[in-house]
Image (tube, rainbow over the protein chains, first blue to last red):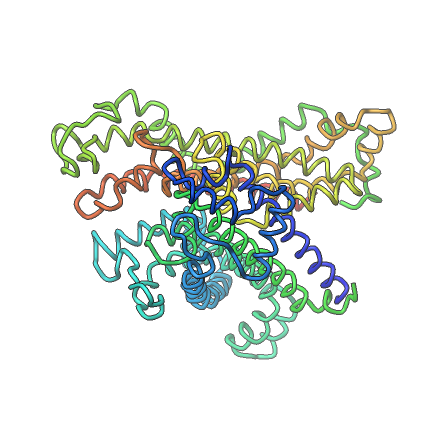
Length: 317
Length: 298
């Protein structure tokens, strides 16, 4: 198993290295002088010269890449072209806000979807199962921003006014200082990922409930609750754990649009702003961070699958 | 499915009439499910609005007809948008771009993924390894982030957005197709085709392709659903279709700040996008169920 794991980690690092080349190539794609393209036509020659020096644009492409990658690895992410602030300073608070949002969503979504999946499997082919199966299928097809806007209409503006439609956080404060701003963005994420996890959990649970040892446990006279939660769920949860890790990775991308819907002060909304302003140093930093999170969570999904599957754990691959 | 039990396999893939019969059976079984019927009805309804809507639009989508954010009147059925344009007319015009771009992105993504997946499965070895590593790199970005990265480099160009969404689908499709095709490459009908000296291209597209149509159809349905969501999201972020063009995603962006006074500018396109993705999702799910059910007995 450890050999397999080391191989996966090496491939993960290799992938991230190639990802950094793709991200860097985005700057190279800018037509003409990259510094002028980033700063726009109205930029003074001094600012263009300063940015040219900062991005090492007068050196070879390989050396530019080396400088940039060295900076990323040492935590020096460069200077924002739009605000002239250090990128690390600009995005640190936003990263924390996004992490908080994903954490809140995960804490709600994971138990909720496992519970829903179990309930659907227990009530298999009864009306409750049909209604929930259909609901999750419909929700799974909806784009995140559609879910977000429907929540705004229902809970923040037209129908009822319970939560803020815009997640305003005063400068210098964090999202957790104003918990009400997290509710709707987190609810959107929960609605976006719950269908996938609960459907997998249902399918896996249905299979386990038909197995011989569950019948055996029932014949022994164990209560329904013990049979389901002690005997069936621990065996049915393996595929759900893997899908959960994948859905957490998915959230790293999902926050981009959802944060924009609510103007939530996280890295996703920042990414959209920076793309609109063509603030390349910030876009590079954010995309590489999101990709790193995504690759690491996918790695954890593999790891979780191995850990919870005894056959793979002892296979000694 | 294992290679050793495939002795009864015909020398060549099943002849055309049999396959067409299977396709008809699959279609009938898919449409036998009520969720597929609902999906199809909604899809056709939206398609009619998208194709014929502009013919019934009372105004031009860019013409100013009333005061900004004014409500419903005899002049403007669903009121005017934040700039005073007719919401109903913009809605009737606004489906073409989103559906057209989504279809194009789906075709590019599924086509590219199909070629990569089949090639990786058939050629194996180093080619397989290299193709799958490249796929890993592109799968390391959430799809929307890859699109934003390229838009930041090249600007909001439509061909670029279609291409990016397509490219971001390709590795995901390739993985599924590779998985399905790997079970086929050792089977006798492939070996037989090789033995009579068919060129690799013919083996890949003549022998393998006809046998991965089921996962291919499911992927096409899934990717179309996701393409609609992604293309709409990019326009909603203001980084796709640019004003003054009428587009459902862009309409939501333009009118969301006046949601309380004029909800229709947001609600009509939101409902249309939701119904569109739900309909493709329902049809894909019904087909996938039928395919799994039939394949289990084989």
